[in-house]
Image (cartoon, rainbow, N blue to C red; front, side):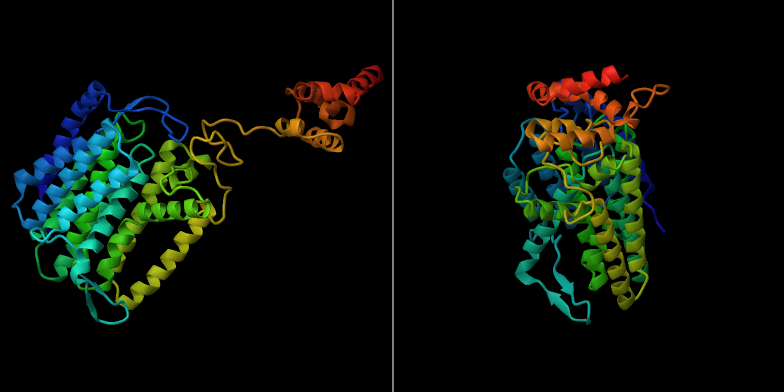
Length: 447
């Protein structure tokens, strides 16, 4: 196997060198990400990390590769995306403007001079080849824009988006190597193989500063550039092959960002919320709410990405009929896991409130989050018989105040005395009118 060692070393070294410079530049121009209720980080962080990956990738390509039309198309589209992301990171853009810019960049890649597009599909149940014709450009644009936004959406934890695309790029390189070896071509002669390894090397250098605890964020410039690049490379590498499996493999490789995006759209639509409204129900949010630490959540998703990557490699080695069975089993397991975690919005854990609403995201307190309000906070909305039932419910829930003291909650009078101050703070007037003070006085005399 011919590996482009020089290109890999150049991309890795440049990323390690350029990232600290980009960090200083982001602070200088005020391209900063500030904490809010939806975000996990607690301090101001510099954005624009994608610039370091972009410069490292572009420099390594220009210095070490022979340029082909498809490579020119990738570099042009990537440059348009990085400019769009830079404007968003520094000035801010509406979702619709970003979407329009992404479509323009994807259309530039799919234009006739470059030829980087999906030109045909294969019927999985026969050898029939379906030529897309004039639909080739719209299908290509849809794929690139979908992956670009999918990677952008999962960029919610330190190192998550970068690590996901890193694993995807290595998987893509492995799949291209297998496919080219079958065709009797040296992998080093495949632009997709070399470009995937260069992209992975640039990401690896950046992750030195982006993995938890991060010193710099990708920003929209970085997440969109990574999504755009891996989508274009998947078309260049395997999606142009005349087999059904070659069309499915990029979907499997990018399974985590694509499925997370699909589930987000479904649950927002079913919940009658705007599609572009952010929430805290993505996969990484759910893992944090389950009690995993920041690093544990990221590493868990890395593990799933590795499993999907290995699955994509297996698909290249088995027959089409076996591949269909394998995909059915894999899809079933993924849907069951998504439903269990609640990311699909159709079951599992309780659904969280929209981001920024101030409501808790579920019955269990997230690590570092606020304590869910206790049941006594609802007493202000009760009266009469409901208040008495509420007090009995609280008496049942009371615990000892400190270790070594008598468990006053073990008797009805003790529990009532423990509740007195709490209920009076919520309902001072109602408590006096309904004889709470008299009951407490009787209890003191009884003691």
